[in-house]
Length: 623
Image (cartoon, rainbow, N blue to C red; front, side, top):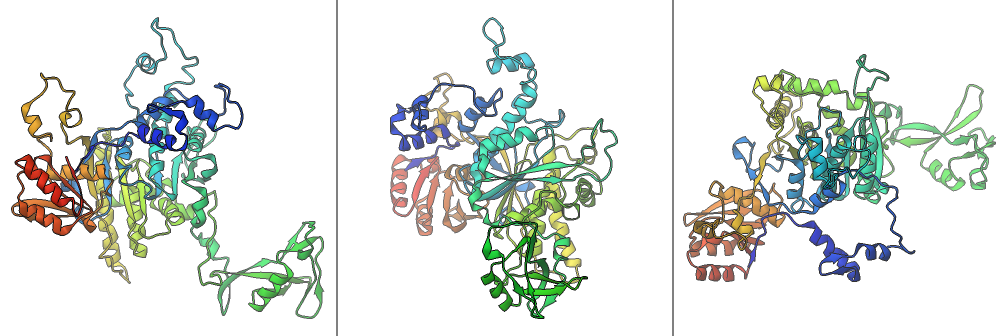
């Protein structure tokens, strides 16, 4: 029988264990000799030298420590704010996204295909994610050790290397480090950013994901007109940086058809639509003799090539001629020109795709104004400033998602455009892609239209948008000339909210509480009084690394509720004084894992007998 930790993993311990497996000589008593580790990884003598090419800032080491440190928080379900709680596979999570990402790291390790985030751009007025942004500058310097006991500064150029960029870098660094672990091996992250921090973000991502995993950067012209108040250059574009978990896995990374691309296929024969491409590559003096040869034209004349080369070898030309893939045309000077045919569908009947272009076309991805109009159309008011248009997110979804069951994560979800885009795409092609939205419960400005309308926080807007968007997708489909069967379309979401652990301090530190703080009732019940059985179930799911979207089937046995997760992944019972009938029912289900509350049994002998019986068919844990 195992007692659950009910907190996130201490990554420092697991990292040291992994290092010990590779280099046992550098670990002693659980501590790593970093100088020796450096030497083990070098083919020359390592000298101590702090000067190297890297991005450093005040607070970077503290961020790494935060990433590795365990937290004992949980996610509490909120059924009344959810839509189709029992059946949906989508999640909407309220809370600090760093803590949320840490809580998700076991349940969603290597499971997310695509992350899109639109973080604060650090313009001086949009950054609310600092750990303690109300600190004075002096307090901040004291906290990170920038002053000695005599109040002397220990770090130069604090003004230029201080909090404005450092706080933002720390905030992003922590979140990117944890989110990387959630990506699948062929997963991709898209990050929208403007010119304020794009230079730092690129270096930051190089470190987190690796320089070799940089996929590219899109330029999005997000504005249509305006910019008259710009002091020097009118800024009318944003950047979207793209990094992969592993660049070698990106064989699927192809783009969506631009309207003008399909127009290229203006010719048609018995095989389908095609466009023509000149066979000769002019202006190239090549030493490849296999690409320099005469070609016989339809009238028997030979078409020689100089100075240039053919695109195809003689053998490939012969093969394509047999497939009717070569075409001869005379130009205005009555000279023969030779073309290759490129078909919309390749020889295997698969529609041809093209690599995406760095400069995004507005007719495909839209402007910021499109995003504004989409929100106004749903709410009849402008409740959110400059949300991303659905078409922009859909373009990225189309590039990356190869499986109609893929999972998409947005941990700066804002107005929930990403959730809207995923539902829209599913409605178009019958997919079952899932989304996880995470949003800080940031309050709306009391002077804003959103606040006056009744939306006191950003999550209230995001949740309501998903509700209205799902409803509108169904209504638009019903009103169309050829409605689709959308009965299986998932337009719901489970609302989860971050909170302190369900367990009292005595659960985590039973031997550390002083006698004066010890309460006898805590020994009998180590669970907080205001927590429900469903609260406990979700913390158990986090602890065991179970996906939070699995269907939960409650079943009442002898007056006791047991919770059966989809595919019998887990059965949990959080009731007191359970009977032998409950144990026998769980044995019949034979789940992979069973979790029981320690107080499920009146006497220890009953617990021992029940655990022994259940252990024959399942792994048993207690809380």
